[in-house]
Image (cartoon, rainbow, N blue to C red; front, side):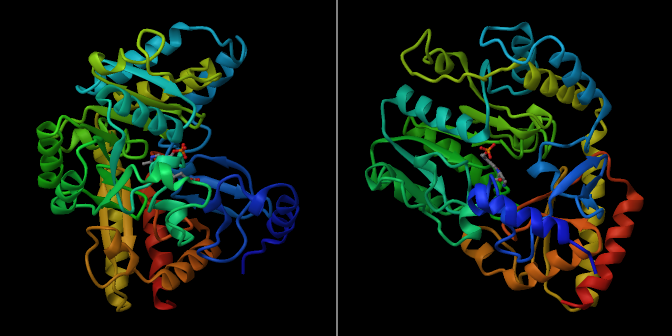
Amino acid sequence: MLTTTKSEEAFNRAKEVIPGGVDSPVRAFKSVGGTPIFIKDAKGAYLNDIDGNKYIDFVQSWGPLIFGHCDKDIETAVIDATKKGLSFGAPTEVETELASEICSMFDSMDKVRFVSSGTEAVMSAIRLARGFTKRDDIVKFEGCYHGHSDSLLVQAGSGAVTFGTPSSPGVPADLTKHTLLAKYNDIESVKKCFENSSDISCIIIEPIAGNMGLVPADEEFLKALREICDANSALLIFDEVMSGFRASLKGAQGISSVKPDIVTLGKVIGGGMPVGAFGARGEIMDELSPDGPIYQAGTLSGNPIAMNAGLASLKKLKSSPKLYEELEKKAKKLMAGFKDVAVSANIPLQVDVRGSMFGFYFNDNGVKNFDDALTSDTDRFAIFHQKMLQNGVYFACSQFETGFISTAISDEMIDEVIEIAQKVFKEL
Ligand code: KE4
């Protein structure tokens, strides 16, 4: 039995001065039960908690740590940058370098602007789309999560769904009346939005949804979104904060032929430091202040530490072309192993993989949208999560999240985790 005494004490102390004891709700383990594990440090594929327990990490800070923890190159880049000063609030060449790297990877991007979180990137992208088209309405999909800015916190995925409060108090109805909801992988529901409003500025989608569990969009569906946007002069926003550099070197755009108008990024491009970004063709981005009228700003936007961490991360990604093949192979091996042990334990399990991203549902049927995802057995997931944790395996603490493979996770580790799953599935 895992001793988590120190984490329990730490959690009680944290709750006195931090709401819910956490700085982001999903970390509170509310939907899986038990005490959130307090991390002491991490190295490679492993997390070490303050009770001296060790875990193989499939969360990797919700996506950023594609090279695992304490990667030498990223660590060196951060330490070297720190010695030159933490932040200047003035332009630095490293911002241009990282912007050029990113723009060179995405055909749909001539220019990109950096911010400090995925939420900020999406919030800015929505304002840009509204300003550029001079329209107020937006279309989002049930179960997709795009950060916690007001217009997007409507029937969100991720933490909000986990708590069953799809739309948060504190978000004015006057604002969310401009947010139209459609069903993922269902083009008829999108057409209905365009019948109900002639004021739609954009459609925003996670082209590979990772916040209702892992649900890739059908290619035909993405093509239909592109067509409906073109027919109505609305912009198509791909929120690739999670899938960017995780599904492939070009995120979902490395897999789908569909080109968005605006892309939002985050997580991996910060290498573990706070970074978000949004980019588009020059005609759209030039509408942003100071050249254009659409205002957007940030004290630590493009700060050199985060930029150097991101640059080191992207250079590593670009330098190993086989990287995504290897990560996907490991993800498929893990999911095939889970499928096998589930079948032998007579447990219904749906699995899916896109590059280094993997997902599994305790569900009799395939999952194509949010309604399907919600029919999953979250009680069984909670028991699974706790038992895997007891055995030193750290998965996302919600059925409505995605798992990740880092380069630090070896085939031997995957074999070990499948063996543990063999035991755990029998106890579900
Ligand atoms: P942040 O503001 O949390 O950096 O990014 C928001 C965001 C935007 N778009 C997508 C597709 C995202 O997945 C996210 C954030 N992802 C969640 C995990 N699924 C962050 C974890 C958390 O909220 O603590």
